Picture 1 (cartoon, rainbow, N blue to C red):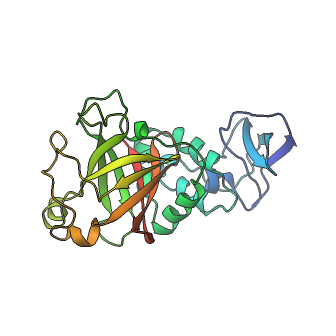
Picture 2: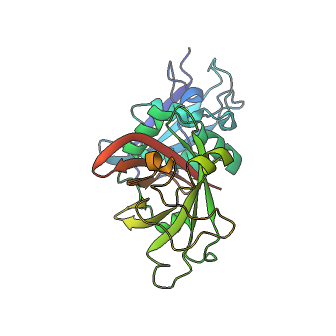
Length: 269
């Protein structure tokens, strides 16, 4: 593939991260979802962390790229970003924040287990993630905010976590109550997996060892997490959830002190 950009680097502090134009074999079409069939040539600026300092790079794109245009709505860009060993949490957030709600959901739910695991590690310490990211404090008590999700399990991987502000003044600032919305079959045989979420540093802990005193509005009735098949799924578990972007978060399950090889990605809708 012919090289299709010329770039010059200069340290100019923070700039607007709106894309990346790699050339040669690493085509930006494949890595960052930027169309490269540009006519006339276009100029784009972005920031990138190089050796611990932020640089702005100005790139001039030519029409020479042989790859076809790729659009983020096809749902593969986030996966390809995560396959890039040099990708930064900031680049991931900028990409996701720039998508339409439908495209963001498609890309998020397209992540498989290994990419979810990589995203969880990349997200560590990247941004502060709070209870308000799950359900804003100003929302109506017990009215759920839905986060569509996919876990890394080979079956029954699609679900949603629903979070709500408690209706108790004493816990409204420090907790979020919620449950897992799944298929009717899973809800009946396993249970709704109610939990209490609390702040833990810059992350959120979703604690299945604690149950809300009341169900959410319109939600299923509360069932203990040691009941039915929930004993093998939710019982004794806690999830650590980290922020990725304004709408997307990533989590991993723990049972006691043991980290489980079970990750999940969420997208607030």
